[in-house]
Image 1 (cartoon, rainbow, N blue to C red):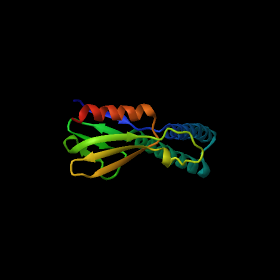
Image 2: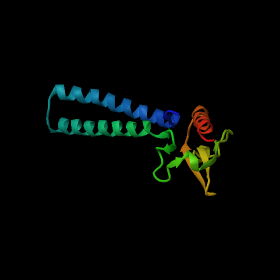
Image 3: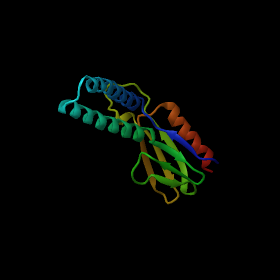
Image 4: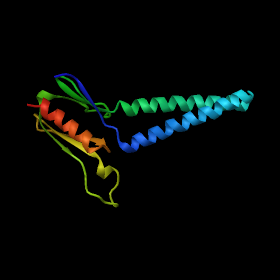
Length: 150
């Protein structure tokens, strides 16, 4: 099977990242107007802060967009997890996915995280939390696991 990447982008993360990018872009416009009016040390500091903010937003957006699940021909990799993030299909016995769907004002965001439970052939169980994801994303991940695990 060919390689596939399923991005685990939370709607909340997408909105926050987009809002930050728009804010930095608008601020860049005002910064450029100040540079045209005249350049002194205050404008220099403003330009420097704007450059740093732009770099931070670009790096953050890059990190947000590369978080997900990468399915290759022989293994699966969870790119948003630091350790225990690569599993070979030959060692996976079964996979369960889950997500809280009940409406409640008492639950925290962590209680609503999507999770994947991987049962390995050495009788160990690994739970991977994907964070807040959509039903469609979780279903796509589940379908890929079903297609690749025999």
